[in-house]
Amino acid sequence: MNHTGNDPFSEIAQPPQPLPVEITGASVGLSLWQATLAQPEAVPWVTWLSPEEKQRIERMARPVLRHRAVAVRALLRGLLARELKVSPASLRFQSDAHGRPHLATPFANSAIRDFNLSHSADGLLIGLLHHTAPPSWQRIGVDLESLQSPRNTAPLAERVLSAREQRTLEGLNGEEHRHRFLHYWVLKEAFAKAVGAGFSLGFDAMDFEINFDAAATAPRIRALPEPHRAEDWMLRFLPVDPFFAGAMAVKVSGIRD
Image (tube, rainbow, N blue to C red):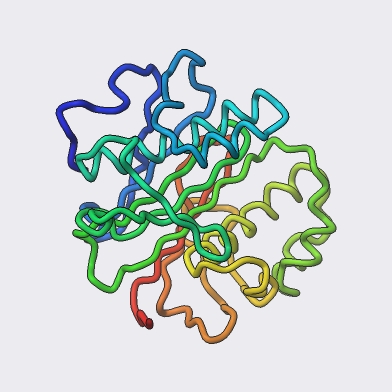
């Protein structure tokens, strides 16, 4: 990543940390970052935000949610600004119909081809596709989920997992069910975010095979919703904080307008 002389994160104790990318030939074209949203209140990041971002955040009822929202937007702005060699406050964003943000500034494609982010609890994951990535790599999606939530995942599993995936969760309950389900979930979310679609994509039409005895192993794509083809995609679990599950999806070929 290119750095300016004035690093936006130079005065904070917990800047974003790079995650290792074990993909042949991708080290200069793809970067992944994990950060904590539990940042000091004194960090003057709110000055980086646009009036629209500030208004949305001010409408949030709970202070902890407002603080996390400021940190999410500021950490994203800081990483992009450092790569683009501009000030964080100068960045302008637009969102598509499903809320996926993209850069709307004139220099948007000079260094960053695409980006995506995900946050859960106090965790944040950001994926950047740089201009040095292979030309066919046009879209990236990432997802991060806290493994510590006590929610019951069984009802959601019946809605979004394929029949084969559901069978791999049979007989499990509580924490073990939740952990396995969330590893399927982050893959499906990362893929949907790379495509730029929501639940209408058909989460139960995705079918991934996971070796739960070797968490670092890349998942096998058994099926994707039409017209998407497994050979056009690269999906990976990411070495995030052990209290989280994280994944990325990159479209590596078969680019269509």
